[in-house]
Image (cartoon, rainbow over all chains, first blue to last red; front, side, top):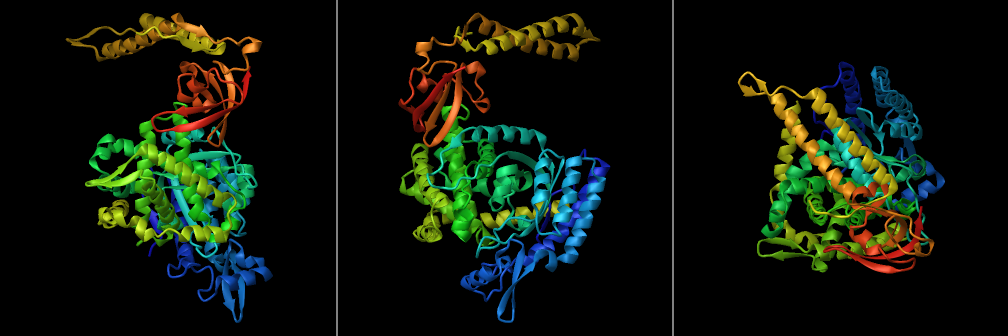
Amino acid sequence: MNAFLRFSNGRPGLSVQERKILNKLGEAAKIISSLYLAQKNPRYRGANFYPSDATKKEIELAAKKDPEILSPYTFVERKGEKLVAVPYRVKFKKELLEIAQLLKKAAVLSSDKNFQAYLRARAEDLLKDNYDRSNILWLKTDRSTIGCVIGPFDRYLDQLFFVKRAYMAWIGILDEQITNEMDRFKKLILTSDRSFLPGAKRAKISRVNVRVEDSVIFSGLIADFLFVGNNLPSSADVSLIKKHGTIFTIFKPTHEWRFESWILPIFQRVFCKDIQRRFSVEEIKKAFLKTSVLHEACHSLMRYEDAPARLEELFPYFDELFTDLLGIKGCGTLILKNALCEKELEAITIVAICHSLYFYASLSVRPHLSPYAVGGGLILEFLMKGKALFKRPRGFYLDSYRALITINQLTSIIEYYVALGNHKEAEEFLKKFSMERIFAPFKPYLKGIAKKAALSLTKKKNSVL
Amino acid sequence: MTENKYYLTKEGLEKTKKDYESLLELRKTKTIDDIPSIWHSEDVNPEYLSFQEDMNVLEARLTEYENILKNVELIHLPKKEDRQEVMLGATVTVDLGGEVDTFTIVGTLEADPIQKKISNESPIGNGLLGLKIGDVVKVKTTLVNHDCKILNIIYN
């Protein structure tokens, strides 16, 4: 397996110097791919972060004696009878030194002071396993022409504790026009203040910036997961984001690929003609972009500080679903203010259904998408039970009015778990739903899409080589 | 063109007048300095066609501004005894289905939800007019149906 994806060689109009920077960053990103592959192990929920014969209980007991066992930046290894923590900076010393050198060289080539300072700080932080300083500097690069994230950040690979960070890198070029458009939409979403559940620990995010990029390279976790957007720093760095904010990045190439290979074919196959005739391809495409912005923005709209610690590995199941629901719910308010039209909200709801089916249909090749698929399954279950989504002789029909009522109900339920629920309650709640049963009526419509999507991705890769 | 009433704040009216004057100035400059010759050899000069197109857009915008200025109604600060009610120009804090939001109700021309200026013709703007603190109103569209409780009203 190769966790490295090149989408382009840069955008026309870049200076010679900028192209040189891209080359240096590209070399660094290539190394990241090997670090990620050393962390990945699809056969075990704890990936290679923990010994595969260690139980969750054994790891928790060892962590009581040595907190480094559950540090985000260590591998846990068995040494005789004992479990010991090995820091990433020790395990990958040679590779990290090489990456740091490349980042420093790229910094010398850059005339963008903020970007330069960030690259230098990131080069140092990679060798310290503490990313606070470079994260704060990265937050100042939201409008830099070249965007680069490199290091261990997302926790999705650790399905045992949702603690360990996986290595990833992305490099991209800012699309200023779409960034400005989406910045406006983000501001609309974030203008009101949500009431938090009494007794819950609220984390208010100080600043939320958006960036839309023409991605050049994905490496590590992001090349494997093929994200269409990402929000960093994440909930794991809650004190940092409360003080300094976040940036969410939308990646145009994966966004286009997911739309053309998945969302559109699903829309055209699953929904009946009455629904299909109501929306043009362009309207569905715009709704998909807005859905991605809504999802990422809503990560910052509602944060419950202690949710990751309370829900442990179940946190992403609730967090990702909750942000999707908040996004749709928030659109209702925008309609009341004449800031969004009803047809746009209908399209956004339809895209959310298509997206749920995408996550389910990709599980065979991307099992780590399970939190998203389960969340999507819950949306479908509630829509069908609420008679908002039902089968007609030639495809599914959506009653948008009922859909919004149902989504509001589900939002309230999920909010309890995100705000106050404990791990046991969350586990029991999820057990009530059989994903196989929920997705069964849709299966016949999804046949063959995964294969075609994989082919189109290969084509995309080959067109750059 | 329909003779609608256009509600503007004092600042909004000043801005509208200023924009109108800038457009008048632009028309003056264009017609004195920038006018290209009509004929170039035997064809109509493309530069002239583009000029003509620009002028048509400009004239349409000027007419639009004239219509607004002719039918404008200034939003006044209501009398003290009336300030407990939501009227145009009020800054209202509401609980809208769990979201606490504060915004000012303005005429459609000044509406900008990002700046928390909501049109009096929007479902929520229209639904709140005439209500008092503590009142609860159902704000409805074909798809959305929210209870909205007024938490505060202020006039600046």
